[in-house]
Image (cartoon, rainbow, N blue to C red; front, side, top):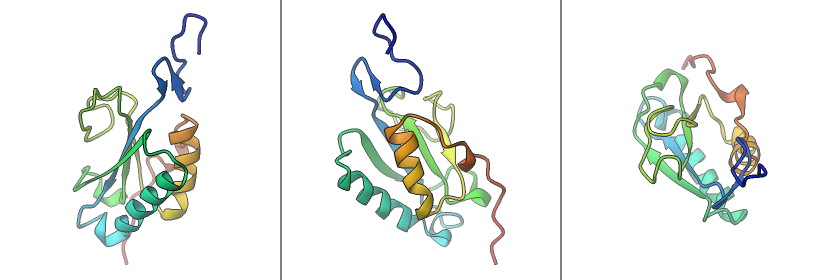
Length: 134
């Protein structure tokens, strides 16, 4: 927090308290369902509940983000920055929105710890190359 009370980018606590995030999991038929996005949604709900983050983190589902070859995708954005509206892609209504690609259940721990709790984007999970399905 700066001397004048403004939140410094990356801080999780701002003038209104802890930042609130919305996490949208792709559940489209090509990238989501075929590559296990249901397990991502279930694990995110479990992690949020277990850590007592339900007031700060909303987990939602979306049919498609338009990046099917890089799925399953997870979109994370600051709920307050978006004014409570749903955001459907990076930069669309929430400048800090981030789209994580080719996500696995194992990746979620870092996203929760570093981004949702720590306020820092997990860059290695961005712009991953497209998947090649068997």
